[in-house]
Amino acid sequence: GESVGLHLPTLSVQEGDNSIINCAYSNSASDYFIWYKQESGKGPQFIIDIRSNMDKRQGQRVTVLLNKTVKHLSLQIAATQPGDSAVYFCAENMGGTYKYIFGTGTRLKVLA
Amino acid sequence: DAGVIQSPRHEVTEMGQEVTLRCKPISGHNSLFWYRQTMMRGLELLIYFNNNVPIDDSGMPEDRFSAKMPNASFSTLKIQPSEPRDSAVYFCASSRPTGGGETQYFGPGTRLLVL
Image (cartoon, rainbow over all chains, first blue to last red; front, side, top):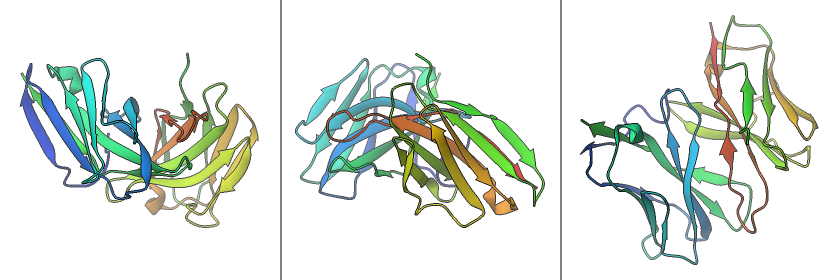
């Protein structure tokens, strides 16, 4: 399904390679961040989160890095698989409020 | 665990008709959100409920949109009358406090097409 933006940036990677998806967030006061994966025709799926008191957090095949100095977030996917093909977007939350700012997303295409 | 449940998954209707979208949040979650997603504008927050009470409805486009949460396990988003520009994917999400920032879990969405 349609996600965000007519011209989403696209990252094409070979199956088995590592993927790095980047996100520049907007508010220096944001202290909680989430990466979502949205497959075609589905809702955003939680992948991994990180709080501002951390620089790095690892999950299963995924790692999130946070650089507060430059307000940058990245998602690393190890050994990318065809099932990883989706749109990925970050979300930032400020001060424990209910509001999130969602990024526009990056489309990941995994080449066989 | 069942995730957020939404119905219908797809809705095609004619301009002027009433549309009702339904959501069942994850059990134990006390916050519920309705979002709209379009190609041009991405994800937009329409309304936020906490403990069944609407807290922020500033994102509701106009009076044609209304939302209710009669109990902790059910919410509706109604559009009356519907217009072609309402065509979008509508997501419901729920969360519970996790100690500063609340992780939101999304449902599969309702794809609405107004002709």
